[in-house]
Amino acid sequence: MQRIQTPVCNSQIVQFESKHAYVPQLVRNTGIDPDMVLAVIAVESGYSPLKLSDRGGIGPMQITPIAARELGIDDLTYLLSDTLNIQTGTRYLQKMMQRFGDWRLALAAYNAGPGAVIRHKGIPPYRETLAYVQQVMWWYLTLKSV
Image (cartoon, rainbow, N blue to C red; front, top):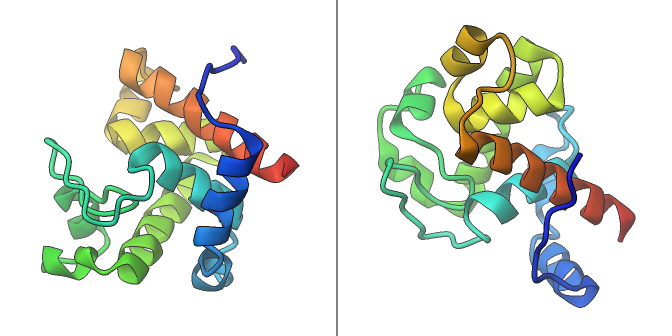
């Protein structure tokens, strides 16, 4: 794996982690490592709870309307709550992990959609998705080492 250049120092990582101390409680019954959830949040939004992407992603985990509908959520205002957004994003991440059985593939599916991972029989060769998987894994390993 190629090393990702990032302007983050250990004190920023500790600050990020401490700001989100409640995440382990939110995800404890999912089987998903809280550090992986924090890594996804770091890359998706830098934990900007009100962030909206040009592709319709909402909140800290940038849940798209398509992903929300896949989980049975029709009212997107539900995703404006940090807690519900993180729980929903974790459920979707859990679903991708159960489907693909590999973190790199699950992250690629979270970013590009499961159809893209299936079509390409692996991580899609999209520049954004390749960078996304590397960045989330970098954050995850960094959070694990702090």
